[in-house]
Image 1 (cartoon, rainbow, N blue to C red):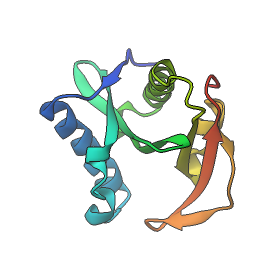
Image 2 (image 1 turned 60 degrees about the vertical axis):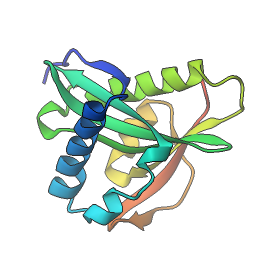
Image 3 (image 1 turned 90 degrees about the vertical axis):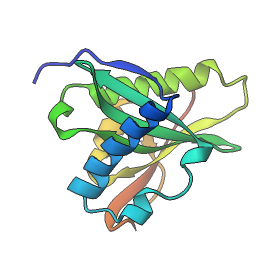
Length: 151
């Protein structure tokens, strides 16, 4: 598949957030059968949300929780029709650069809980596995970490 021209940005409007939630619902609830109550965990108001757009439509999303020691990437999702076209990589790189540019030397690192099948994807972006495998929402996961400026 060819790469899609992807534009990434922070999601700021109510319509942006609706697009984020629609993508997450399609991927996590629709495709992966994650319980809706687990997917919508009540933490969205405390997160920075991002959108990836291609061809004039939202095709990818993720959110970031700002914690004392890290930026925790969560709910990274790309619509099925846009997968394999570097949308996810473009979104992750954008978020990492955006957060590093605004970080003010806090000493935070990047952190995420990856579905096991996606570990190689995150490794290509500079993340390294830092946990054993564990189940989350019935799906095997591994924790991963990257330092600022990697990826």
